[in-house]
Amino acid sequence: MLKIFIGTKNKHKREKLSWLVEKYFKPEIKDNLREAPETKESFLEVAEEKALFYSKEYKCLAISTDGGGCYPSGSRVEAN
Image 1 (cartoon, rainbow, N blue to C red):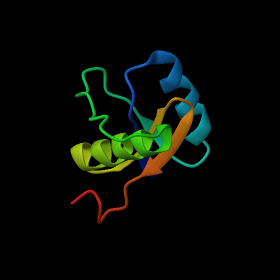
Image 2 (image 1 turned 135 degrees about the horizontal axis):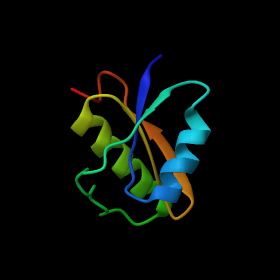
Image 3 (image 1 turned 90 degrees about the vertical axis):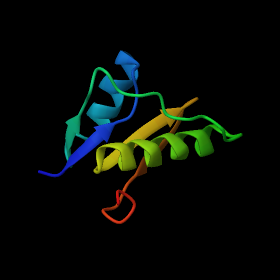
Image 4 (image 1 turned 90 degrees about the horizontal axis):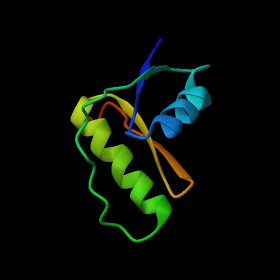
């Protein structure tokens, strides 16, 4: 099964995002992950920014959230 990185330190969000993807992917969680940048304006843009950051950082698919907006990211091309 393909893994997907859960891009958040928040325990509740980790559980929720893991539940959201577990039928299709193996959720990957790291306790000591780096903070993703949050430089965009909207919740969706920040969620996208975080997901892309973690996808590149861990070289795998990633999913992240911000303010209720959820964004999956990370093709093999983006991870390079």
